[in-house]
Length: 295
Image (cartoon, rainbow, N blue to C red):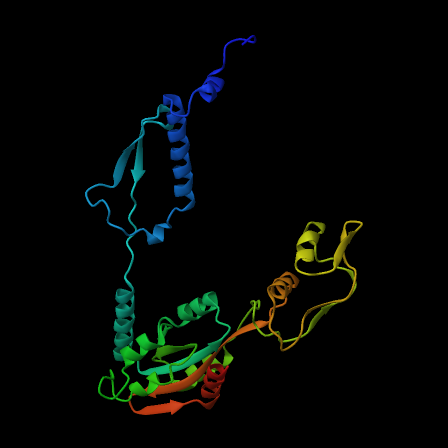
């Protein structure tokens, strides 16, 4: 070779594949490949519940290659998971406790559930009432499905009305106040994909001044025929976002959110009421829950 001695990398390439350094590089590449695969396939913390090492929280892994740091500590974190049976047992216990401490119980159903608005309602009524939303079979077991296993006389009648999207409401409030509360309760929010449009929304050709020029590419992705005209977002043709009575597409739901149009209304409907001396069925709530089941 006239240009001088071979470099280290060139020398390795000239050596046969069975050489020591070639094996070293092959091992290094394999370790790196495994590390990358482990990183990509890392299990979420919530699912790490394997008691592999009970006597230690870390394991020292030795790597012979100095470039990889020699000894490496791998922490084995354990996240304690609450078993499903334990959670269900607690719900049953809480419902039975509510039966003993509240004067009446209601089955209710709902439209367009919104967790934050339900949380606000719970906070508002926490001094006099309690709301349960759980699996219907779990709630039925807590109440009792027949006179033989019911928690209190007549309570099993509530169980057959726990269908579809329904929950339990225990309270010490008078019946008239509960009926007024459920009748007047409303929570407005943006509609989600698949919800039924309550009105037809059509955008007319022309400038959309509520949107900045940076939003033009995103609006095009939502199916709007837009362009930039001197830095202003402009609709080049009339566009129907949604039609009344039809389900919303993902693009329509997102566009309505951008326009600030709230089409979803979170409502509650009473289905039936139980007290120690009376059982009552509400026709409006019963019709609503049957309509949900038929759909």
